[in-house]
Image 1: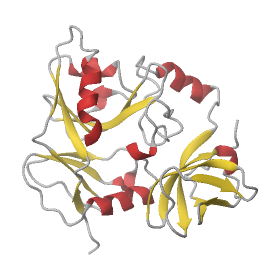
Image 2 (image 1 turned 120 degrees about the horizontal axis):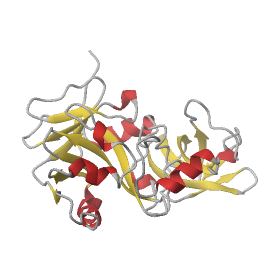
Image 3 (image 1 turned 90 degrees about the vertical axis):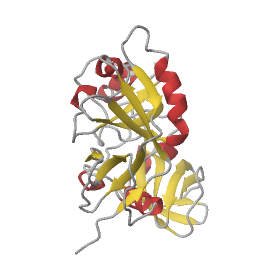
Image 4 (image 1 turned 60 degrees about the horizontal axis):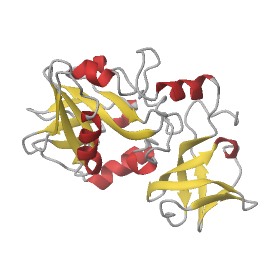
Length: 273
């Protein structure tokens, strides 16, 4: 039987959003439809600046009485502070819920008992997200999860630039991270304009790496020495790179001493508009 790994992700934390207005409070702030979060169903979403630039992303899970945001641990406390600015008279409370540990399971792994779990909505093969207050047996590590998400081409916080990255650059449309129908939220105008006017010039793209893994931020050049983007996260022979869409035409690309080959998602990205 093939392995069905579960890994603890110590770089993730949980924010609890409770109170009668928890759904409506988040609904006007984040990129996806919070009302869809339910026991067994997670919503992937981002918080943006008013100008439509990425601040943080998270999975929204629900136990029926509160919303739990699975997000980057380093940004959890600042995210609580930022969200709290918009609370006003809303009946909502926010805190970092330190009693929870975040896990990921994939390859057919089932949720352990007495946990809150839901499928990772970004890709069918991504697996499940698991929030646990009790110890969970694991048979994989964070590096195994990182290799799995890189193989699927799923960017995470290390691949984005705070207050710089646009959601469509990061592939949030393909990862079910944007609702185009729910109504207004902070940063919606630029997100919609980028989509409908075809303004996208670059995108985070999974790459196969031949040679030593280039460090984060390494410039990516074409055969003529012209800059075409930069390296983001990576592990082994797979990584994520920010590339000009015009460079996704089969031309040779390099970063430091490595050769990069974009692994285009389906459908393939079109020419630069």
